[in-house]
Image (cartoon, rainbow, N blue to C red; front, side):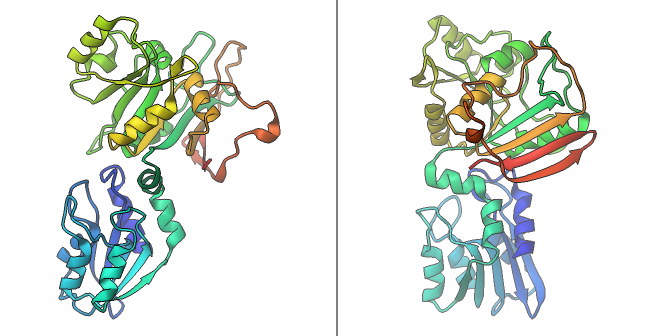
Amino acid sequence: MERAIELAQRGRGWVNPNPLVGAVIVRDGRVIGEGWHEHYGGWHAERNALRNATEDVAGATMYVTLEPCSHYGKTPPCANAVILAGIRRVVVGMVDPNPLVAGKGIDLLRQVGVEVEVGVCEEKVRELNRVFLKYITTRHPWVVMKTAMTLDGKIATASGDSKWVTGEESRRMAHELRSACMGILVGAGTVAADDPMLNCRLEGNYRQPVRIVVDTGANISLERRLVTTAHDYKTIVAYVEASDRMHLQRLQEQGVELMQCKPWEGKVDVWNLLEQLGRQGIDSLLLEGGSALNGTFLDRRLVDEVYAFIAPKLVGGAEAKTPIGGRGRQWMGDATVLRRMELQRVGEDILIHGFIN
C-alpha cells in the first residue's frame, strides 16, 4: 500500500479535481503490475496497473489507495475491470466519499466473490487526498496560504520593495505549489504593487494555475500583465460592483473572465468566492495575497494549510508590511495554531509547513 501511495503522488497537479490514486498488483510476494491515475480524464490507477501487468493477473491481489469506482464517468467503472481480470483479492486504503461511489465499488466486488480488505494505511491515504476529501464533501476548494517574510516579519521594505525576500530554492518550491494547486489567488493591491504574472515558470511539463484577482470594483488596469496575457492563461477577476461598466467589457475583450460575488463588509465575500470557484471545478487554491487578503481568509477561518518561508534577513521599519493583516485576534489564547507542523531548511531559508483544519 505504501508503494501505491508513492505511485499516486506522481499524479499531483494533473488529476484535479479527481483524487490521487495508485495501484499495485502482487502475486506470491512479487509485484507484477503498477499504475496510477496520471491525468484528469485518463485511465484510473487500477486500469493502468492491469494494462502494465507483466503476466496474467488472475488470482492475484491488488492494492489500491482508494475504493475502485463503480460508475461511468470520464472512464468506465474500475470495479468491473478488476472483476473481469480475475483479481482474487483487493486491499483498499479507504472508502471513496464521492456519493457516486461511497462503498458501491466495494459491494460490487464482494457480491461476485472478490475478497476485499479496507482501511490499510488509511491515515496516510487521507493525508494524500486531503484536497479531494474536502472538495468532494463540501464543494469548496482546499486553501493553501503561502507567505514569505524576513526574520523580523516583513514581506517588503518600507518603500514597498519585495524582490526578493527569499532565496532561489524557496521560490522554486513556491512555483511547484502553483502547479500543484488549480488556482492562485491574490488581491488588487498585490497586482497594483507588483504587476505579477502568477504563472508557473519552471522548466518542464507543469500545469498552469487559474489566476484569480480579488478586486472589489474591478478596477484592474488593462496594462497589467494579468490582463494582457489573459488569452494565454485563464484569468478571473472577482468583484462586487464595477466602478466603470465599460471597463468590464474591455476586460472581457482581453480574455478576462468576470465573477460577480456577494458583498461582505463592502468587499468581495470570500466565502461566496470559494463557492463559485468550487462550482467551476477548482478544488484547490494557493493564496499568495498581501496582508489584507491573507488576514481576511484567516479571520473567516478559510485557510486549511500554510507554507511560511522565513529568510535570514532583517529590514526593520515600522511602515514595512507583515504577512497577515485583517482584524486579527484580541487574545493570544485565540491565536490560530498550526497542527502537524514540519520544519525544514530550504536553501538559506526556513520553511514552516502545517495545517489549520
